[in-house]
Length: 79
Image (cartoon, rainbow, N blue to C red; front, top):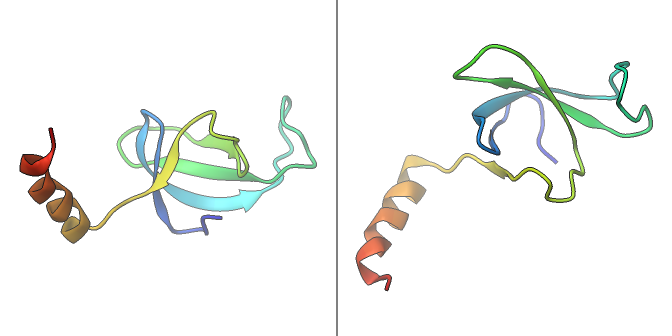
């Protein structure tokens, strides 16, 4: 589970900061489930998404610059 303050990549939205893990009192949400409240870094608005989204929208941690460079270095070895 991601924690408040962490950065993640959310689907095609891009990098978001986790503002909180909550049970929002919003219509259309299951009040028994936990949701991330995400703040996209490159656009306005807030996103609520279930903590256990079952792969419907890809969520992954942001990788470090070193991890990205290591992946780029592997490109020539790929077929």
